[in-house]
Amino acid sequence: QLSIDIERTLNHRYTEQDADRSTAVLTNDTGRRYLAPESLLIKTSGSAGQSFAAFLNNGMYMRHSGTCNDGVGKGLSGGRIIVKNPGGGADDKTGNVLIGNFALFGATGGELFVVGQAGDRFGVRNSGAVAVVEGVGDFCCEYMTNGAIVNIGVYGKGFGNGMSGGNAYQYDESGDIIKRCSQDSVKAISLADRSGLNESLNESFTESLKKGQEVALLYHLTQHVKATGSAKVQSMLDNWQTTRQNFYVLIHLALFNYQCSELL
Image (cartoon, rainbow, N blue to C red):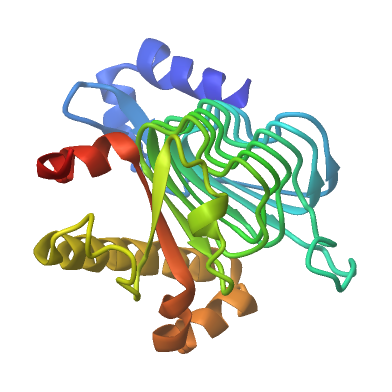
């Protein structure tokens, strides 16, 4: 509701003189007014209910310490969401679930950084948001059409199911993501190892693809550390030459087949 009220105020109630007087109000090339980055900071704690930070807009910054129910960042169109562990929790790999199912459902922009794990269908129908998370459930990136999702923790079945756009990055020391991702929708490619790719990708495409994806991945991880102070991700960055050996990028098959059309 707050996002809607801000949008109405800036674009339907503000005059040009009002906008000119405010250093926090910017205007894009289409004439839409929006808040400058981090103009509004909202801090919360405890247990958040359904759809925390749904429809968050430009310039809004929501930082939550605690857990959230389903639908975090649903319809996100701008701004930034941070969810951190308030302390405690379990020591096992799946014991730090902070947010529920279908986070970023239908998001078109903005950022989400979770210092902990998410439930099922993380990033479902995402069409523009960027997120870094430390574990997901089943069907991560389902029906995603754009944006970027970085997962550095556990994952379930159906990763990339129905995905037709955007990029997903998975940290996986076992390399099982190659076989466990949705074979009908995406192809998992190691950023460091070209084994098994010689027959399907030419060398120049492989190298340019990996270099570009690695630059993007490093940027997302760096932003995660700046926003959250995650010790886990900082350690990964500090040991990047080792870390990169275990990162995979999931490319949707439409793009993969287009780039390799001569092989079809």
